[in-house]
Length: 471
Image (cartoon, rainbow, N blue to C red):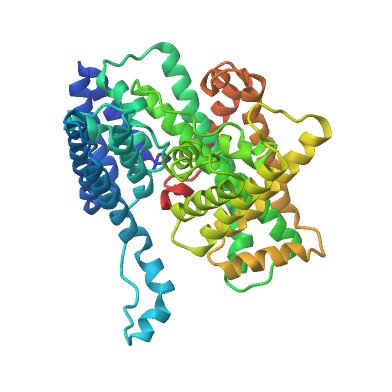
């Protein structure tokens, strides 16, 4: 069930009415759990047991770890059980064929050809797996009390506004909200509706139109046709903006839908395309994943506490795993390696330190560097193979003619709309993103215009998936 579909609009209207007609958090959580099962099962009901396998394993592990700590132990075995189970399920569905194909020479040496398995990737498995793992790790570390209600824990794991593509919420933030009575104020309704409309603007008006340019350029490359260097360059830039609007649009809708249910999710984007270092970019882009990788991977590996050499290794390892998290392909590993290398280089040069703000020419140079690391690394993110990625870069490098008018026009219109969307937050950068958009008459007018555009100009039944649903 997609956020940008009429089915979801009907579904959420029914949930909203039923939810606020109930009294008490327990009754509301029961409805949320049922609604989440319908929401996820609408895509493929066969994969519902996977989510609730994680629920049962991690709920039990949390209780057992807590009991072991109370008895003077640590509960390490239960933590390992939780991590191994979650990673095994994720590994089978997402990476099994990747490893089979890459170990083909080994199989051939033993005279065996296993081929590839017919495995369907469950939607959102990377997101809810990381979310449940963070809970058991936090219980083990003593940062989170164990949840003693299966209903509460299942609602936390499968909360439908952020189930499929995040943000990846911590139990210490989301679970307390699900435990207490929730309120819905006029201000919350206003901000939540604006967030939903803003997400709709980003997805339908910007991302889906830029997709025409992106699919044309990358599609021709991947199908073996020639593309001019100018058109390919426009396609590469267009994909960067398409991805930003597609994913941040989803996140805005998730925040708005959760807000209408009285739940406050974390902001997942803070103008990442205006970052002046790759280090700062990762403080602004997909923030919930960045924090997860920092807290549960980079710091446990040693972070920056074990000397410079080890720090660079930890940065690279974290980003390579972060790349592989996105997909079972070498293109994602290369993408992670590019960002890991950029982060290490900036650390060597002392760039992007927290609290330091470059100004003037240094700020401009930093922005150009950061933006183009993002843009050209995304060639690997979008292309279907390493060969296609390299062909894209070679085509761009050999520019000999200007791009055609229509893709260039769409790109500039998209950029202009993004700047208008981001301007209110830029002017209110000391405030919460939600406050900034709620206080912007310009953004209110834009979101209403996008809504009218969607109702009047988009053919009925035209629904496109969000890019991050494939992860």
